[in-house]
Image 1: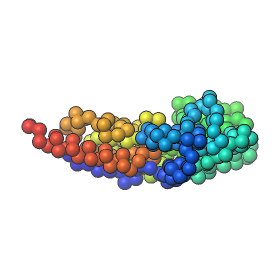
Image 2 (image 1 turned 45 degrees about the vertical axis):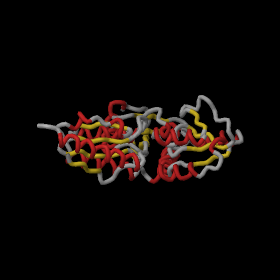
Image 3 (image 1 turned 90 degrees about the vertical axis):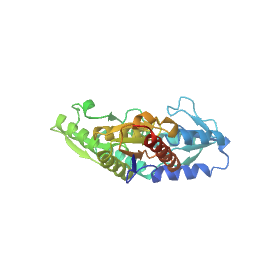
Image 4 (image 1 turned 30 degrees about the horizontal axis):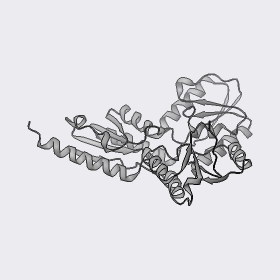
Length: 286
């Protein structure tokens, strides 16, 4: 059984930089993280062990510590002002590409356009993107698109939306609103683009693909969909303990890819376990 990795995969610079900032926090027990720093269960467990406090992403319970860590997914400026007004000191790890998407949303509204965000409704990044707008519409995909009562529309994306999905949704918006002036700003981040292209190419070369990432990771879920749509049998795992030998009984080539919140050490452990599975299968009697 041959094992190959995607050309582009795993942790992006935004997640890596956020983790570096978090590990340098001197008083984690006096710091509250707004939601999950990254959608990775291994990282979340490590942060809890260090003493970080965490509040749910819906903010139902406000942070009680003075220091508040803003995750790579970002928050709205409105929420930032409210936290500072409440006396909070912010440790801001917002990815600069998410900040760029925020700026694009505000610029579209300033251009007198109704803003449409292509992304997962309720996702923490999407909530931040629309949090400073007077009004906005969030659509998960082409099926949610409708005709809008606005002459001018501005469209942007959650940063982890696959390019083709964004293109299909934009086409649906234009088709449903033929008389509207539709302006699109491409805010899909480059790491997402590179990883989705590499995943599609990998799936075309493999019988089976293992996608590594957290259960709550939107971009990991998108990689799973991309690999399956490319025709490869695909399994989503968080770590090596999730792998099952029976999956690979008739497999010649296995591919590995990973979401942008996945640690390199986790991918290495996955590959090691796959090598052991390959050895087990090789010695089984025909």
